[in-house]
Image 1 (cartoon, rainbow, N blue to C red):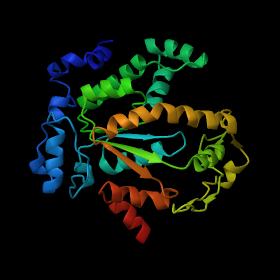
Image 2: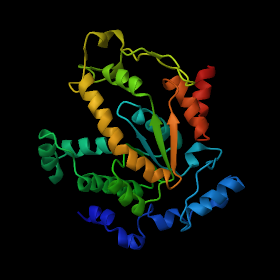
Image 3: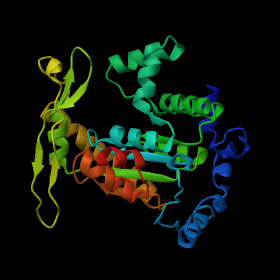
Image 4: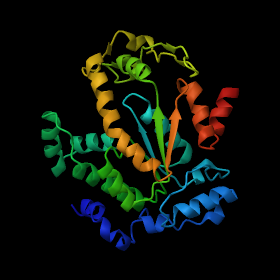
Amino acid sequence: MAALNRLLRVKEVSSLSSYSWVRTTCLRRDLSSTSVSEAAAADLHRATSSVSSPPIIRTFPVRQDPKERNVQWVFLGCPGVGKGTYSSRLSNLLGVPHIATGDLVREALSSSGPLSKQLAEIVNQGKLVSDEIILNLLSQRLEAGESKGESGFILDGFPRTIRQAEILEDVTDIDLVVNLKLPEGVLLEKCLGRRICSQCGGNFNVANIDMKGEKGRPGIYMAPLLPPPHCASKLITRSDDTEEVVKERLRVYDEMSQPVEEFYRSRGKLMEFDLPGGIPESWPKLLQALNLDDHDHKQSAAA
């Protein structure tokens, strides 16, 4: 439990000098090595001081090679919005790990460690995994990454509660929180369209979403992600992907997420991003919003 104690002992966080993502280290980044505009540098300087009203992030430092960006980002969004898709793509582009707490729980479940049996009982009873266990797993993962020389991370779907956000804030300095958004009707169609190949485990989506724009808002088109012929007859639907369950899942998420969003909004770290469509439409616009450039994507598109 030493790793968990490190996370929960927020009052003593300044003594954890060996942990490279501790706040005191993060707040002393050398801005001179980045091509930051004067306005952005002023914003970042104010963000590291103890002012009562944090600045709003307007721009992001850009370097020639995206993998030189030292990022510590969080991706939020409703179930089915695409957090895993976009955060993993950015993880590859920036050369930092994509860390999803759901994956950490699944890895712990499949291991033979002491936590595996406890987690199995929790999951089998349909209970939520406690903050303490989640934070313990995350702490171990970050420390393992630090020992391997990882320079940053992208957290997928964490934190989910104010308590988690507060503890995380006292351990590491989150640079940016990207909140991916889609209309509820689109999210419902996406979730109900999910399919899994029972043989290879591949994930597909049969929903063909074409929502017309209204009240000045643009329409949204998302093409289906159809399986190859050898998977087409083996598709199954997740047992919890029913309209009733999905609607309740979205309602609960909305209720829980609003305080977390406001937590980061008040600190000037929240970036709301309305997805304009599927990956072909959304990926370039997300990169533009983050002031990033995907040279590999451009080359493949031009080929």
